[in-house]
Amino acid sequence: MRAQRYSGGGENATLTNIAGFQAAKADLTLTINRSDLEQTMMGAKTLEAQLADGTAKADGDAGVLTKLASTMVDFDPRFEIMPGSKARTVQVAHADPYEAVPTKPIAE
Image 1 (cartoon, rainbow, N blue to C red):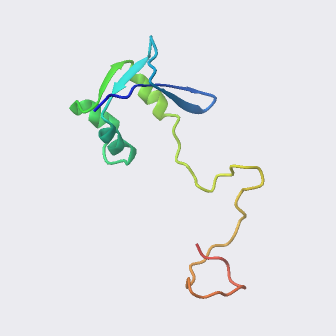
Image 2: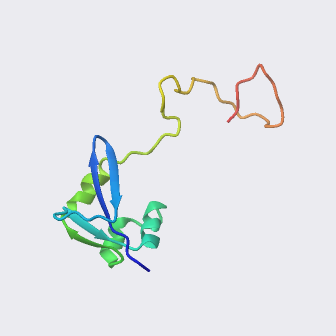
Image 3: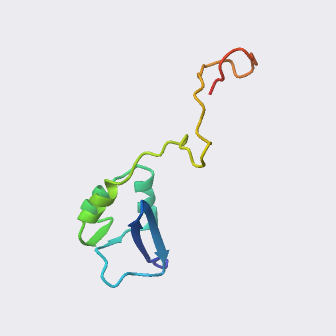
């Protein structure tokens, strides 16, 4: 399998990466197999645990990972992406999904 190299950075609340490029003076170089990274993305294993057991390797300032993690938030899928697309406040009820009663609140 061929190794993929990416350079990443953050600016203006946006995390970006560039495939096939490595910065000459990177603050941190993280080496991890894609399948192991997927375990972290799914929440099955923390990156810290993978660094501790040698599954992942960090060269440079590992504090960069802590700084990056401190900027992460849980995404709310009801986030207003476009002006005017904010969800209306609707009373949600748990109704029979096969029953249509127009006078009752909408069930989710």
